[in-house]
Image 1 (cartoon, helix red, strand yellow):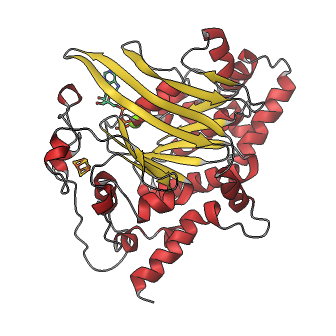
Image 2 (spheres, protein in one colour; image 1 turned 180 degrees about the vertical axis):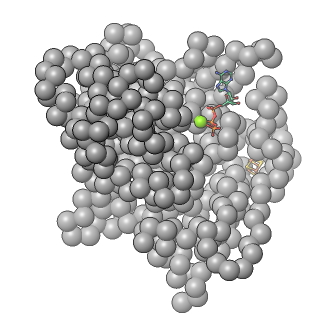
Image 3 (cartoon, protein in one colour; image 1 turned 120 degrees about the horizontal axis):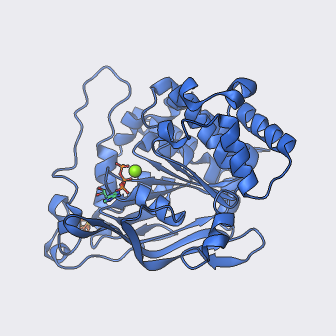
Length: 381
Ligand code: ATP
Ligand code: SF4
Ligand code: MG
């Protein structure tokens, strides 16, 4: 077998074993298989989010649509400014004051089957929902913990705001979570955030996310700004936690190798729109949107002696105050034709829960040698 084909197959197995190949007692594999028929936990339906700026209202999220089933891990990928964090904040109703959600539904299904539109429930109901049903770690984990509070106070305050009364039980739960994220529990429990390294703060944020056993967690750039060794450790922690605790997860990342490794499904965002959504195997090996192809082609090599030139996506992300007519990607797209400059394509099913918003999805293909560069298998060894 040619090296690229062999590599590709091994990598695909590593990246997607969870979703496709139940092996013995491997809980992760079993979960991924179940997930394809599991109930939908979160359904984001045609959500539009705007920010007020000195140039007027800009649309940062434009008709985002995706669904996440119980036990799935969804990677939200895209260039800087594509609206990934805004969508995460929108789901948790944590948008800044200059933002508004103008349209859409975000349907959430509780474990007992009850469904609510998160955009419609009262503030009181939402306060109970946040942290106990869905929790988020923030992109700047370094600053997401209150610098003047000891870690233990943040944990106790969060638990008490959700009705916990027993300090001993909160302490025990916190220490247990610190152990799970591989931190020295006593040291971290009593520490102020500034006494911890960036990687330790990220682990504390992940532990805080899990304090109330939420069904869904959102991790915004969990490994950005960390050195490569710490990144690897955080990835291992997330993977182990998922195997043990079985939560559903959305994680935002620029790092496609990370997405290949941790995700069951991938959602590609461009200029506020979800332009491709599907199983990690489909999106990464048989992408149907030229932007996903562009992202994959831009992955730098992580090993090898030969210099491999990268293919950057030409042009730059659009100014959200002046998004081009038609498909927003058309000025940068090698497949663009006349229709692309006039009609914004809808997100349609191109086969088997694989969605793409492209007039020419049937012509799009990826040069498979990109997988030699990404080399997921060897980074996970
Ligand atoms: P990154 O990968 O850099 O984190 P992102 O995909 O998370 O980017 P967002 O932070 O969601 O992108 O931003 C989407 C768009 O909304 C960007 O153009 C950004 O400048 C704009 N934006 C974000 N926050 C605000 C704000 N508070 N006020 C005005 N515009 C904002
Ligand atoms: Fe490119 Fe046209 Fe597809 Fe947009 S619709 S991604 S411009 S081919
Ligand atoms: Mg962001």
